[in-house]
Length: 198
Image (cartoon, rainbow, N blue to C red; front, top):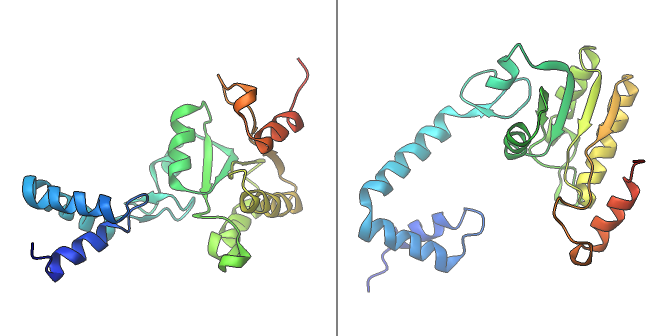
């Protein structure tokens, strides 16, 4: 079979997606070329349009087509509570699964000096500016419980406390329906640290 440059480039391009290795990329490329060229054209059009039109909200930094996202534009949301997350996917997950009606701030990553990611890469100056305005009364830290996520949460907590803003951290620990024997040591340790009186 002729694996021309075009096919090789398509397979290599598909590998930029998370979890897509060489074999998966090959299957996707062959599927689009053999069975769904129309779907491939539609995918290419939607991807091009999204890359051209979608940017970051000027207030919370989530992904949006407008200067302000729908959540920041919603006047019924509680502007005194700000939940800080790592990714736009976290915003969607929290907004769909909880009763949280405050606003968000998206870091688009976490502090990682070894990878060259510092506060300026995460929009910390914009976050500090929002805290200085005095509207935010509580910052809810919802970064992941990795070493980098914890370091990021600590940095933001200090930033908020310097402005007199209360800081809380989402609970980590035993998931609903989880069995203790299957939990890793870190999860179990967080669960014990976060215990509360009943």
